[in-house]
Length: 454
Image (cartoon, rainbow, N blue to C red; front, top):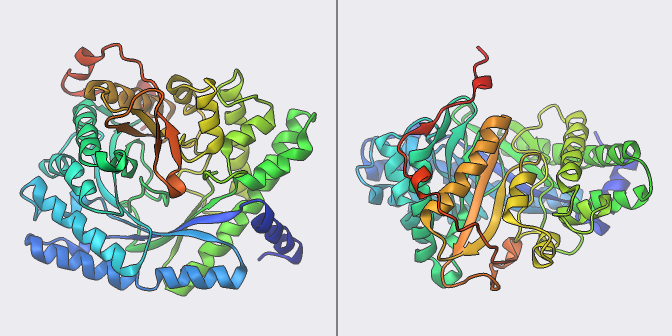
């Protein structure tokens, strides 16, 4: 339980430092919805989602009023649809009908996003997996709040380069289909290595097959709180800096634990995990980049950036793990470009490049996130970037991800505006030297030697 001192500190964090619960995510298993008849499958999916999630939004609203902590999003994640639709779907178009059902159900219960239009293909693709991936451009361009992810690699299985190649092509198709909206469809597609089963954050959330029938996962976020705490560390040594971050992370995670347990009780759904990722927004003072600057960098991208981010990520995890017995998901620092004003400033100043961001992902939560690139970038180049990021995750036994947005009709020097939490971004240059021959090799990159631990 929170004591009175913690309550007062929490009120201060909410009112002055942008503390919020970024999301309550209800995970729903659709395995019992499987049917060989496509119409019946869609009916089962719609009925189960609307039944279990009918009170999700109202619950979030009540918790906000009760304890005074903003809850920004209410979301749903479902079992990877490639598994659910395999029996009924005979074509990519059949899978698109499921995406539309998910969209309809999500709108019916009033949530912000629904994730799980997904496939797990780190070692190989079934016929259903391939059809789902083929359907992604149509599915995401014809729905509004459906999110998609594909896990193409893992430390245990290696990297499925056939899937990596295919996704580079599909990403460009999706960009083209949503070009009237600055190719925003790609903001709803994430490519993973070592994807967790319990991630509450979009666009990569899905309800893993290891999970219960339904589960509540909560994602907290407090870059502004950490930034405020770091004001008193100026000129102090690393021990003092680390202790400050760790203690602040503890307080943030306790808030998430409180909300998660309350939501679990009200909905009658088991509590899963608290994800304590530092997730920025375009709002001033709600920036991971500004935290790095407070640690001592002129801009993210300056020498020392990777070390500073490693320190931040580690201390956030250490503090959070003491605050909750069930920390999971991604739990670290997100470094999306478009969603973080400090990252945008660093790109515009010339301090931050895709190559530096790639290096930073070796030590943080996810990967190359919400990066706008020229719309004329080749599919093989995109696949090469994906493969590089997957290799970091595979070798380092961590989750990495790619969410690139090739913006059709725009190039270096242009800016793209997505609005809301997605913010805006300058178009970043990519290395245009060819990797065609590498990407066009069939098969998979084997798992690393240190994966053999049995």
